[in-house]
Amino acid sequence: MTRARKCLMVMASLAIAAGALTGTATAAPPGTTPPVQEKLLTTLDPHKLAAAGARQEFISQAFPPGRTCTTIAASKSHKGGARACTEVKRVDADGRAVAERAAAGACSAQPGYYRADRHSYCLSDARITYTLYDPGSGAVTGVGEISLSSYAEPDAGSGWWNESFTATVTKTEGHVSSLAVNLAASCTNACAMINPDAWGTKVLVLGQSISGHVTYSSSPAGGTVTMVTPQYSLKLYQPGDTPGDWDHNWSLPLKVRCDAELSGYGCVISQVRALLDLPLSQYGTAAATYWYAQAALADRWGAPDSPLTRNKDEAAADRNRNRTCEGGSSIPFYPQDDIKDDSCDEYPFAGTFEGGTDGGLCAEILPKFELGVWKIYYFAGRQPTGNEPCVRGHVPLAENESAGGKYGNFVRAERVLDTEKFTVSLEG
Image 1 (cartoon, rainbow, N blue to C red):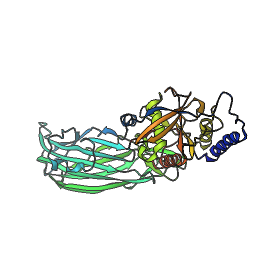
Image 2: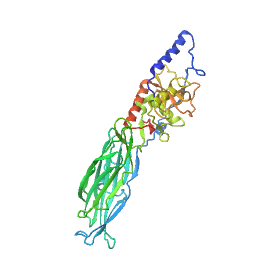
Image 3: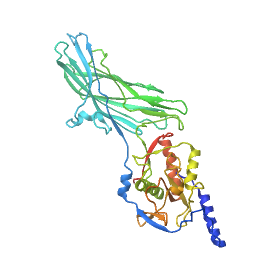
Image 4: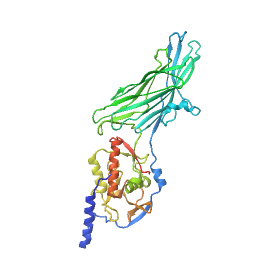
């Protein structure tokens, strides 16, 4: 995204005007002339716009499977002893009653799956069973089942976050009439638990639920990044039994990335790419410039299959900007009188590893909103072919700066680190 280069543009305009007033031509670099005549190239097609901005907003992972068993010694409740197992079950949700799925809450994942976007993850209706077997015959003598759901929002502005859980007893059969439920969490790497126990141990009967939360805290060293994996231990047993080796343990099948590279601490789900949202309705000519690059140029920079890569080196961004829009370009950028405060806006952005191409190799366009339609113009003799590696647009300075400010805020809010890839959406 270009910075304001208004002074350079004004000086260029004054130089051209001065040449006209004195009757002498203002010299341009060899082989170039100030462009004057504009020709229509294309119009902005909303259908193409939607196709260019397909969003990658979330990922989905199955709840980790597992089965653990142990032998229960003889007691008043189990005269001959028993064998108990916990197991994650895949259960078809289509036929479940609404009450059975109450624990799923607001998580929109399919039952038995985790769902994550950049700033949250949740678990929907994972079914975990506790089964008693006769140690002699192996016959099932009792079954209990819970539905487990969770929700968490790692904080991009701090190093701690809560994960809330709800467990609901969805089945009791035979010798199992109630279930004792205990859930504790831990985490790996530069992470600690402020509150590891969701609710202690609670005894629930059929249809009852219990809710609570755990709290994680991550504080990586300054300038470093850590990948945190939340881990869980579920004790599920019949009251009167002693919880033992059949506890169910699993890890979140996603990682929470916490860093101190940007200001302070912050955490995101970095497996989900950050999305820079620059809707056409808000960012106007700047967004139309980026749209043209995604829809018409071969590289389609910023699309899901052709993401951009952040470069945190500000000196490199200045050099990139100079090569594309300023004195380092083999073809100068000439501000146009019919565009208020005309400025050069480059795409790919100067602050990316894809930016910095010689502006003379870029498609140069003039997006204009006319009679309710965005029209893309070019200069006579310089019609884009679609194979250009970049675009530079004639964009009013205020819109250019607005888009540039959004990019800066985006990097901080989404914690886009150096060399991290991101996509750009222009819909809306």
